Image 1 (cartoon, rainbow, N blue to C red):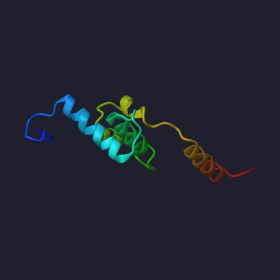
Image 2: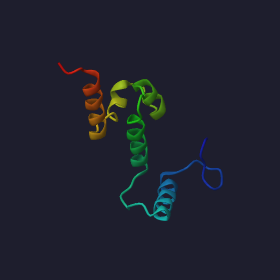
Image 3: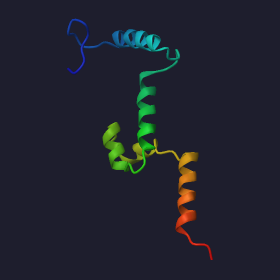
Image 4: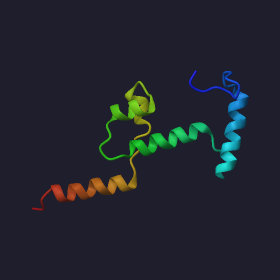
Length: 94
């Protein structure tokens, strides 16, 4: 096992929950924050990295299908502006 309890035993849901609650409180994070929310946030940040491919994103977040990984590749206003600026430069005016 990669992670174990204080005496080397398998981690139970109750132990994980109490440890997460303590860590969340120590960090001053909101009460409703879940461990999965951290994973989702990291995946969204990774998907926004310039030049990252779907295959790289899949490997990073552990998804086996492109469909699952594409969920995190949301278009952002900033990225839309960058694409528009690129097109303005790439397409000559008549």
